[in-house]
Image 1 (cartoon, rainbow, N blue to C red):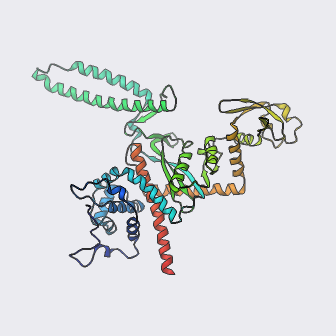
Image 2: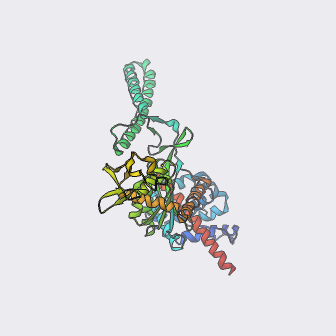
Image 3: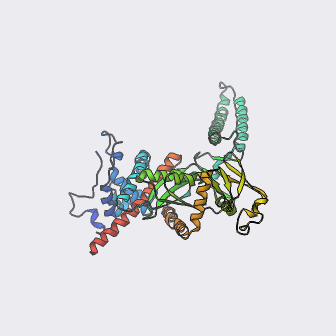
Amino acid sequence: MFRCDDTIYDPLYVRSIRDLLPEKSDVFLYIDLFASMDLEKFERSYALMGERPIDPLLMLRTLFYGLTHGVVSGHKLAAACQFDARFRVLSGDQMPDRRTFDRFLDRHGEAISALFVDIVRLAQKLGLVSLGRVAIDGSHFKANSSKHKAMSYAYMEKSVALIEAELALLRASLKDENAREATLENSLIRGEMARRERRLEKIAAAKMALEEEARAKGLEQVDPKSQKSFADHDASPAKKGGKEFQYAHNMQIGVDENSQIIVAADRHPSANDSQALLPIVDQATENCGKAPAEALADSAYRAMENLTGLEDRGVVPTVAIGKGESEADTLIAEHITYDQARGKYRCPEGRTLKSHRMKNGQRIELARRHCQNCLRAEICPLFAKQGRSTCLPQEKSRAALARNAQRLRTPEGKASYKRRKAIVEPVFGNMKNKGMKILVRGKDKVLVRFKLFASAHNIEKIIRALNTKANALAMA
């Protein structure tokens, strides 16, 4: 059914192309690894009739070897399959071209996403995943779009009115078709009309996408300054540096501390990371069969629902509280305690504080009489705000915030949070240094391509572990 590996044997020659590779080449580790995988999901989509396709096994091991060795684009992969002995062996000497690689990725989107989970579970079986500490972070991958092919909502409305007026004038200027001398002029006018109609369709589609996003957020009106790319409606404007910005996709990962295996990978629809933490933890739990013991994240994930959500899932949150959040407000949340028996809030000295229920929490009044003749006045953060009021989240969130802040001040908490950068940030660096870029459009295709990148990173870690184990056995 498939075109198989032609490098295994050659009836015309004694030697094979495999003999050009050294015995310790990592190519053979990739061959053995993919031979042990279940690739039935890739094989199902092919029909028995027609020209024989290249075996998915050959395509996958060629793709992943290229991704882990910096040969990413379809053009470079096709050239390597012709002139590089390693890629000729991996591709079974079938020499697939660029279009073959592109069609393979477009055809097997769901299977590639499922393969990511299989690779995570394989790493877990090999002891490379411990789920002790998992660091979560996000990075912006540049979208296949330009900021010059975008428009703000306010300018969209002006452009729609202008183009409709131009179309009305062009329709009115069409002359009688029966006049022979007017035929050329009419064809030119119709060409201009078709060009404006195509542009009007693009603007209307981008305008509708902005309106749908606003409705999803519960907004009655669209922000006039909000922008949308015509090329990729799912890309979001992200800051590049200073006042510069680019259209990008916010890609999120959860990385296990043990061997830097990516246990969860997803695309977040917003450029803001605050709502991306819990979905990554849930995905890691589903992929590995159990929840991580501790989750490390920076201050972009410090939303209250993240802290309480992690605790509800049995995960210890270690989330930074700095950068943009007042340290004094956090200290106040820690020092005010809740008397559950009487339903009252109290200061560190045990004095009752007057509170008013709000939509998302409590409003606490810090009266001056509470701080008079108080022995803790010099060290208590409530003393600085006496005579004013402060807002506290709901009790469950306040307690989770206090526990997280206290944990970060302990030597163990500081040492644990310091591991965050060393766990997760080199993973994004590894991907981008190897030239892994988003060259497709649409959120579904972007997620499939990113899971392909994440799988390649995990395979690189697995191959390194297998190589180390083989060398240790050889020395023994």
